[in-house]
Length: 200
Ligand SMILES: *[C@@H]1O[C@H](CO)[C@@H](O)[C@H](O)[C@H]1NC(C)=O
Ligand SMILES: *[C@@H]1O[C@H](CO)[C@@H](O)[C@H](O)[C@H]1NC(C)=O
Image: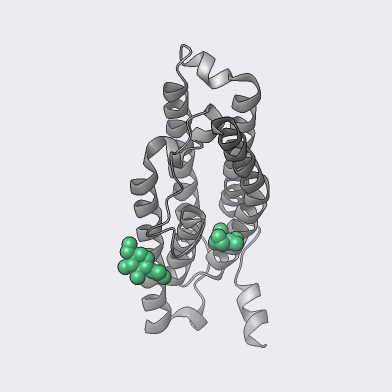
């Protein structure tokens, strides 16, 4: 058996825990994109938050953060029931996993620190815009440190535990984030263009 086939055969798709983790991975970015669009069109969350956009955004932040924790938990649980690959039982895979997880966390945490809560959790859909685009680290390394960082954390975990299923799940995370970005980037650009047009 070649290495790729061996790898693929070591992903156990029949495990319910794995299927649930994949659903959760697909659900999260879909949910926050829909919630943000609904807010933009109807101000539903702002209304729920007594007419205060900032409070509405905090509400969304708490929900997104919580479903993120749930997803991480489901992912770890799913991995614990998946086979380990002998191909990944090397110190290199473990070291790469640690690096990936560490750097991923640096990207996520530094971008949250730079953007603040409303900047991180879709505040622009609530009309809470940043004054200027953040251009220093981590935004000088990637335009999407949150998504890139989160992906690297998934991948790092998979490598650390030596689980091909985790690598598959990470690839799926990548696909879901790429789809989310196709919706988010033009929308954010539009919101800021509208703001800048009003300023002039
Ligand atoms: C990004 O900015 C940081 C300082 O904020 C700097 O240390 C780093 O070298 C920069 N990286 C790139 C790729 O420009
Ligand atoms: C990482 O960021 C780049 C550029 O910003 C983006 O094209 C890519 O899809 C991102 N990758 C993931 C896994 O989110």
